[in-house]
Length: 447
Image 1 (cartoon, rainbow, N blue to C red):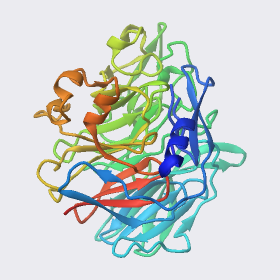
Image 2 (cartoon, rainbow, N blue to C red; image 1 turned 135 degrees about the vertical axis):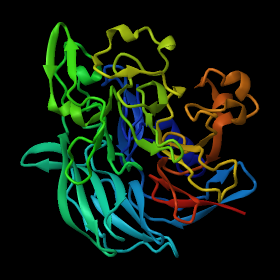
Image 3 (cartoon, rainbow, N blue to C red; image 1 turned 120 degrees about the vertical axis):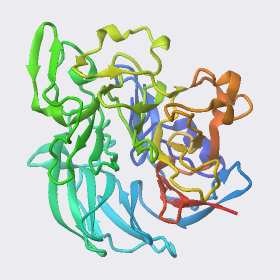
């Protein structure tokens, strides 16, 4: 993904950018994205990111709001979560450190709460965190990271018990592929109101049935969103592909893996969110050079990769060539960017603390520009009201695609998030918290 500095440094980094590594392309790592031709449809590679520099505060366009710096000095943080009203856990990608931060005074605990030995090439590392309520007042914390397992690179999801001061009782929930990679590992997770754990993994540069290649290898736990029992990783009740049959080239196969899948055809994602009103799942998805996406993820959703990114009407491919699972369906993205911005975190602000306008509506961060975008959902909560995005929205964004800088500006809510945005959360206080790869956590509050 992209790293953004201050002054002339910002310009230099933007020009040399590469992403946390997604491929037509955008990606996450301690790096600055730079284009190359390594992907089947284009790819962004990563260069070393400069040492952390003091920050200028980002800006928001709404004069009734302001931004506060909560904490600073983190090293390439990828995700964060609140474990209680006053405590944030932040993940540092390369060192595998879980850092505890006080939301009261911004104190960053010097010693890591937990340090995990991770693989950290390209987008590998300590990538995702989610928190679920246990029995009583207890909490369970889930971590997604890339590890070397007896010589094999794997992506793992473990659960931990949160004591209020430490993470204990590690338990393996998901054991997933990590090769060839090293990018497109996904890693974001969220716990739904149904109590199930949703976790996304990217394509890891594979070309199988889950990437919509009919003659490719069978389902292999890549390019999917899992919906699982958080206690043991088993398939969640009501999953769309339970006892599903895969039909391709007149051959029928059954595969137990399918029972854990909620969606497939995912290129790479750095953002999952649950609508607090409808309980629907949404994601962001990174294209290679073109057509980053925001998707409403219905059960059985086929996102279309590698046959298509962005709306089908803008691609030479058709849905005829997709791999079709029983109970699956393709849908165009709710919103797209023609040119890569590397969208990352997506969050419904489940609060009225910033005003009724923002309550239960969507914020999305990007990695390449360090922008924060705002979208007001429509009456059915299946898409966006473009008329609320900006003065040019009704005409220029009627197709739900950003084609130029004016249209990008129309949806831009905040700018200057140095290093690019990697996570967004609604805090227990009802304010919006933004994590940047440059090492900072910000809070957006009312004046």
